Image (cartoon, rainbow, N blue to C red):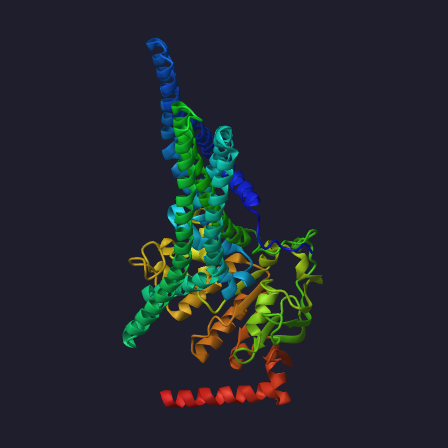
Length: 604
């Protein structure tokens, strides 16, 4: 297997950025080229103007010649500056639009990347590390890399021109300017490397701050915050995180302060020595007054360009670190599909097989599942039961391809699911999870999970009718077109049981051959849950169905019941068979039954 990149070189990232620029905004690349040409030529013309003027005056040139020469130079400078101004606004808008382009790409990648990546805290941290720098306006990674690469190109071309001019005076002056400017560069680079090395601390703090802000503003937490007086608690956490961010920024600022102090000292030495030498040269007659003006301007411009080069090289390194974070998230959060995938349409049946599957979420942690083997035949109704943490949901994640087992195989129709494309594998499942996801779209769109234009309204109504939710939805003026959610004025708000029916309608609409219910009714009472599961069982018809629950009585109707405990398959059989064994299943069923009886007596 090809080893994944851990970073990208500056040149690689520049090529990546320019390629995207050319694809998104080709005119921007043209504007940047115009900027480079004008920014190099215009200062040279401006620098030559005083020398040309002095030389013409001292040579007592004719007035007509002076007007023509100076007018031509002045007109050239004016045209160059005008061209720069014409492209400046459009250039600025377009390279900032590139920042929005990458924000959208990162957002989409966070939705479509491999689930096993984004589910983990490490993946969330990497997403914030990639996304957060794009929110910094002109200081964002994309904007800074664009500005820095253009400025460095200008500085390199100018360096060649001005060093050539100054070399005629004394090559040692060029060496002095370069050496002292290099000290500035390395001092600033040291500060930037320090900031990069501790960037994860800031990413974690920003992620926590985002979570606290979302929780404080969220409707779901609003009741608890008020009833339990959590305002001070949340405010204290907010302040503590903000203090951590402030402390982090102060540490970074301290490093940059030291770099600026070194820069100030070297600038004083560099310019003082260079200008002192020029004054000495003109006073001793080694150079003329016109040459003095030219060299003085050349040293000034050269010093400025060398300083800009070092500063922009630091900016480029800083932006490169952030660009690497962005590209690593964009390009390395998806495992590649198999080179020769098996077409799911070629499968003869949908038999599901777990063969000696062992899995742990971290390679060095205890297995969540240990040597699990079972078979589910097409059309069978199978229940996975057990206490919380037994590994039931993990089996769902593995079957869906969200994670891969460390040992063993998972096969559908005799084919290891690793040989399917992810998109094809997902098409085999209609899953109803415990976490309820109802976006603020219309009822029809929430059932189809597609834009309204791609939704079959007739099919939506059939699915709602089959789950018993049709009459409720038709009570609203717009029926299936009514917007859902309490955040929308007069939006459709469903009870817990009705939400489950909506999710089941969603699963029926997809019409996949394998139906999975992953404890979607955990918030309901045992009787309501049992009735809901039996209803789902009837609706699944000839589909293969997997029902997951920690309440044993809810899945008595299933063809097979698998009892999981501590990651192991402890008992297998029908409800009646497992009760006759008088084993762990029977023991748990008796305990739960007794609890429900006591609860019913108390309620009466």
